[in-house]
Length: 425
Ligand code: EPU
Image (cartoon, helix red, strand yellow):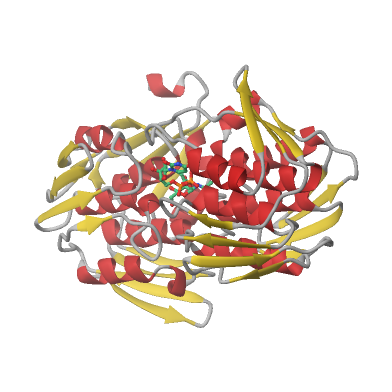
């Protein structure tokens, strides 16, 4: 039990199934983080509901607090008090911990005409530039300088313009959208990301008095307004968390109801899982799914929404490891993102990964092993893979999982999985 000796959180998983029961998904991490950043646009008190209790929300709260705001979370309700006077700066220690901090750039420039944000580094996903964020903001009138690892932006008044994104980047779309709400004139973001989290952000901005049209499509039009006001908002549910339970079910077999899930945000995933042999139907408050003892392999390609999300990929690769046949997985969004493959191979999976492709040959059963979570989604993928592995799987560095899941272990256990947190907090 060496892996438990350092107090690091470890998730112990034993072969499980068939699963049965009901779970509820929390609010979407990738929605609430941006909505929290958007609160910087105008002083006052904001109330957000359906906010997951996860590390990333605490860190974004810490970032807002360093700038001068106050945040309080009780249950799933987050209150943010945004003052008149703030320090428009995102320091190195927080940006380094959470890349999503870059989305404060747009709102800070809109509100204060200046912002100082640490340059985000690379990560397990490979080299992740922010050139599209900066170019779009420059087109709106911002001047940037970079020194001592910080980007400093200045602008007299943001000006509405047409910005054509080279790729439908989620973060760039969000930064530009937030910058545009109080800009002078109309901003059109073309080739915008279409993720449901972008539409959720736009709904929040509109509740603040912004005039955003077309969010959720490739062309977002923002008519700049002079004034905003604080707002209340209920965050959409986390489609990646819902996918995690679906994949867990696919690996262990059985049936489950996932309350709060939005099948309309997960159409391509539902189609793929159905092709693999799962049955999935919408319920009044989410979805119901059933999986046979063994699924069939399919080929998969990640794409921006409404394509198959790159965040589903580690989960789906885990699912293919025990499916019948061979599946070819192609990554089209990030350069890296196959690191967890080596961990799955340690669990007996037959996977060959090279560049953007992985070939997964299904085996009858995986073999429990100590493995390490490289990031949030890959960590969750290793946990659910453990459900289909003989013996015991110990997933170390499980703090990565806490960044995005309020209670992965508890929810899987609620479905009858033999999983527990055995060290750390
Ligand atoms: N890109 C550039 N230049 C830019 C911006 C992006 O080249 O200026 C590239 C990236 O390097 C990447 C691709 O464009 O290859 C897509 O990146 P995107 O900007 O869309 O991703 P992101 O905003 O950094 C968000 C999510 C990720 C999710 C991606 C793709 C948040 C906080 N993060 O990242 O989610 O994988 O969109 O859907 O919303 C996660 O939740 O664990 C996570 C990593």
